[in-house]
Length: 338
Image (tube, rainbow, N blue to C red; front, side, top):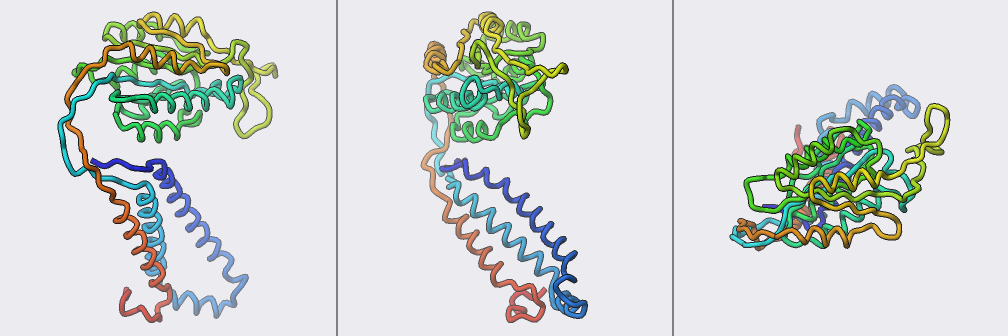
């Protein structure tokens, strides 16, 4: 079993495709503009003395060096012992609304950012509970299967935004259905779904799914995000706010009544989250009302740091990159003879 001391550093892995694209662009630019700086004879001489294989090998070493450096910075740890432990807890799935209305700034800095912070704060208070994350707008997807790895939960939470789902809307029925699919109903854990949304422009069918959840013994709590008077929706990468066909600024308001009724169907509560009170304490208190079941789990313990291995590999590939010259006639040709 592997876990990470600083899992957030793994987000830097997204830099590798960008680096590869920059290398490709640079080589293309270099080839196109070489004649502007060199005579044709000199260019032929340069090309003749360069090894294409070695050039590509250098880039490979660079990328591998960066890859292992990032993994090393994340401080991977490997569990060396497998032990049976008993713990108490519940299973919960958080369904987070990623529709554009969640960018409204009636709650600072905006509804989505404040919601993500509230989820992160909630994770910090969990002990023994399992948590999963579903994201939704017009569609719903499992962002994180149910887990007791709170560090992973925070990392997956940090990556989501309104661009994570292309289809816009607030399809709560799909959000509830996807959340129910996340649960393992063969275990004894009590289960709850926490829906964080403004509830605006919701699709039909949410009450049917809420009744289905109730029949399965799953509680649904709703966190209605936004001020009563609402606010406009900022346009991403553009100035101004979202407007209707007549050119009027669209004002988004949370649907408190609907979300309260939805929670009531599945024996849950609705909490109105605003600037003065995000409702986290009340929500956590409600979650703790559920009976925490004791179960036995096999888990890995006695974790050992493995970052020295990956940092050593990173250093090794960076040294190989330095020692590998692109010229065919270089002092290392006996070592790197290709």
